[in-house]
Image 1 (cartoon, rainbow, N blue to C red):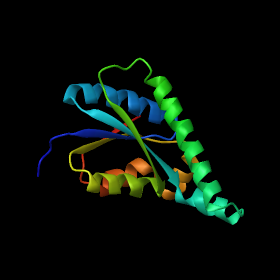
Image 2 (cartoon, rainbow, N blue to C red; image 1 turned 45 degrees about the horizontal axis):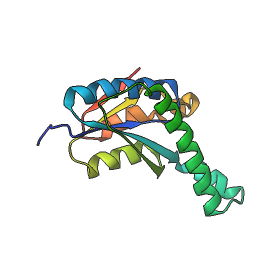
Image 3 (cartoon, helix red, strand yellow; image 1 turned 90 degrees about the vertical axis):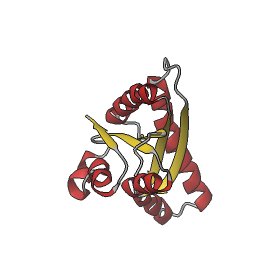
Image 4 (cartoon, helix red, strand yellow; image 1 turned 180 degrees about the horizontal axis):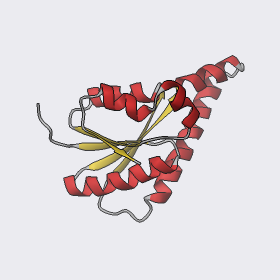
Length: 146
């Protein structure tokens, strides 16, 4: 099993911890000579709620893109002075932890840098945090930033 780091995945949600994780990831990326990928996951529960409200799939997709763009904008604002690191972005829909785990399974050489808690402290108390779930279920290296 190779531990060569080829990319750093940074799940973002617009939270302060997500921003701190992105800033930390930039320092790691410079050390490894790799880029970072900001990764926003529109939660499946939100899709279900919006669907129950009678919104079309197109409206759901637009809501997901708007939420992702807001999270990316917050991250890019914090990273505005960063030079020498490639910053890509990607979105997905589903359970945030499961989507991060799936990405690590599909992308050899990825390291995950994520915040300890995101925007939903109540949800994490009831269901467990994304960072805890990722730590338990991925084989990729993970750094949790608090």
